[in-house]
Length: 67
Picture 1 (cartoon, one colour):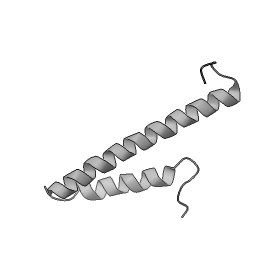
Picture 2 (cartoon, one colour):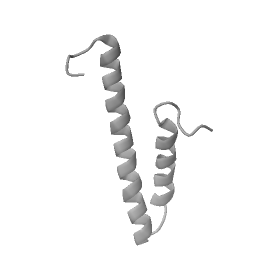
Picture 3 (cartoon, rainbow, N blue to C red):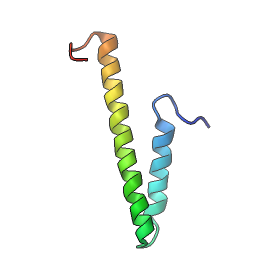
């Protein structure tokens, strides 16, 4: 399986699977820290991917001048 599917979808899926696995762990402090880190990375990853796609769409389609 490739490292990414162009937009990093593979990495997002891996982080999501990691979150599901860690959420089934007990009240271990290490697991809680890992859940927090994976959540932040997942949110940032989706935000960056969405923002990049938004700007590419506007650049290709001749969108707003701020792009």
